[in-house]
Amino acid sequence: MSDADDTVQVEDRGETRWIRLNAPQRRNAYDEAMAGIISDALESASGMRTVVITGVDRSFCAGGSLATLSTPTTAQMRKLYRASLRMFDAVRACPRPVIAAVNGAAAGGGNELVVACDLAIAGRSATFGQTGPRVGSAPVTGATNVMSVQIGEKRAKELSFLCRRYTAEQALEYGLVNAVVEDDELEAEVQRWCDELHEKSPRYLEIAKVSSNIWWNQSRDSFSTGLGMLVQAIGSEDMVEGATAFLEKRKPQFKLAEDG
Image (cartoon, rainbow, N blue to C red):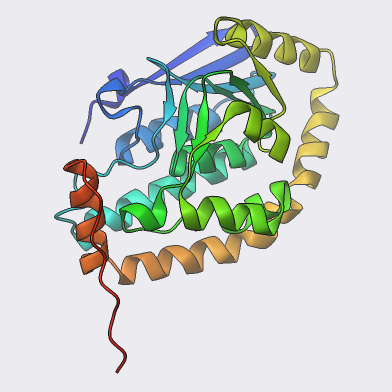
């Protein structure tokens, strides 16, 4: 288990809580411990007016850590899946607006973290995309369901199936983010959005947020079902090959399963 005190930095700046992912050696991919600290920071943010999630070192979040997926155990994968779902739910359950300040690559579960956030502002060099089928997984906690509502079903399937990379400008065009600014202006622009939100009634912002969760709530059973299927696939040839290929920086060689 990683040292979560080092891998997640939580800073309260006035009435805004900044949650900064700090695992640059793996491009801010989260493990169970990191996801737990992020969830705790969100769940204790009711005394703030806004919350911002961002990353260090020109990376936003590379999703769940793949370091152990080439030799997975059911117990550790269940814990990571549960921690991921708790983190995404914590974003949606937080009574305050949560803004993704996308300062670099948002990949896999990192892209789904953008989907979960209420608002998203990207630096111009940020990139977006899913990784699931390319690394022996599937993006079942946002990308295959809620993202369809945000950017359209065909476009969401394109991201989820093809695992391409998209620029910040493309993400803005699709509706995945609200604004794109120069990289060195990102945090100042996010704080301006926070300051504007601080002028609004926190009570009625919370009502608006809870009401807007209708599509997330309706997709919640899909998340659980999808994670259940992922659990059944733990240790599969595709999972091991996808993770191994990623770690070895080569193209995976997936085999077509035989019928019967």
